[in-house]
Image (cartoon, rainbow, N blue to C red):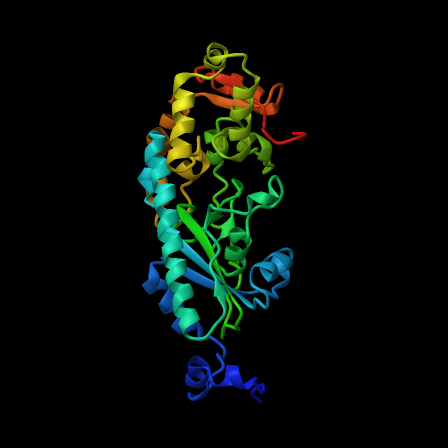
Length: 343
């Protein structure tokens, strides 16, 4: 039953136009139709999961805050160009990361528009950045794309803590759209892991963040790979503040480091490594060269990253420092602060 409106509001032309047409409440979204919408929008694969999935209970409060009444996840996959990610020229790899993020956000935006026009409430959080920096150093992401993708059947987590798609491997970017409507069918997790447990990611990580036993040193990864993101930027700014003058600052920070930070600030923040992604041979579309010649694959993909002369950023007296000094004597090691209070 329609709510009785004040006369002035009821007589407004917009209200009269809306109330003169049949009201249609959006119903359950057909999964096949939605899949086509997502692929047409630019996604390379898509899966669906329920907000009520017990495996995603840790996300419930966060997605409810982002979209009150959220019912379903639309998990999206965009492929990355593999050899760009593998390149030892990190500007090439970073351009691939950023461009794939733009493709993902554009696809998610188009999907949200189609659903909105069909009468559904929907939001598309960023695939990467921006995030909720007022929460830093706590949880800054609106929705955790990785567990949603796993629940939707789009892949499984490898020991390098990245989702491995059964076809595309880990050369993917993930995104999630939240919708306050039920979808006619939801995916289920894979019944196997595409991860080969080859440990090439262990061999590739320059700061030893990925352990042979499957453990993961998040701090070591964030201090080096995310040097030009939140914490690393704070440490760089602290170095400016702590320096007595320009000469002291330039004695502590090289010209190339300053130029690299400028580039990240002017364009988009650049990752220092992400070599674990570069060397992973898993996935049906990826694995063949590795199967044909494993040594040749390692010489082609792994060795250039290991041989690259580059600065490795580590916390003082950390396992990462010990690993870097022992394993990569040709790579300069620089002690830094995490930029996070108490770490």
